[in-house]
Length: 195
Image (cartoon, rainbow, N blue to C red; front, side, top):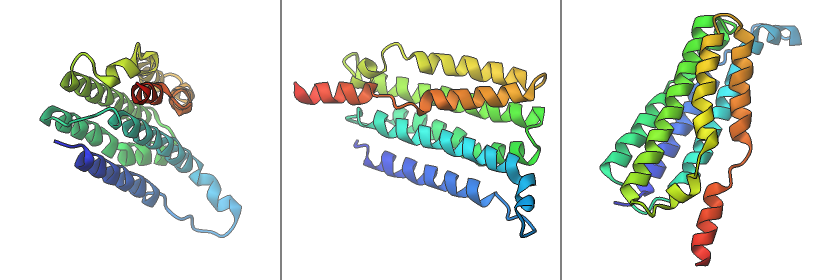
């Protein structure tokens, strides 16, 4: 079966996730800039999660360019990823409202970790459904960022209980790691088109 419905559904869910996150931000009572000060943790959490959702949307978009057909396994793996992404608004709001307290920050990290693992499962399911010559297999290569990220998430989750700011620095560092455009898929697709 084709991938159009999978792409459209995923894009819709991701758009709703971003919308829910921004709607969770409450308007301050007061007209001065000082009224915004107590909201900085909520705003920081929102910006961080917005960047993460954008990274997932971008990478998901690129990954689906390598897909020729969609199997039932790919559909379920994609839903698994969307499930973890759909929890972003909840953990984002909880972490921001509680000023990066250990338990909300740790749960935020758990959701980030599970989303990363779900993305890896989707990637592997696509590769398996396309066989040994899969374009995605060639594009991913050693996937050092994909292997490093879960380790860093575990470190961040653990650090929330003894150095909560270290956890936030690690979450930002991982986002920055993935924010740098990854051209692996584009290179493989361009090479495939040239042949």
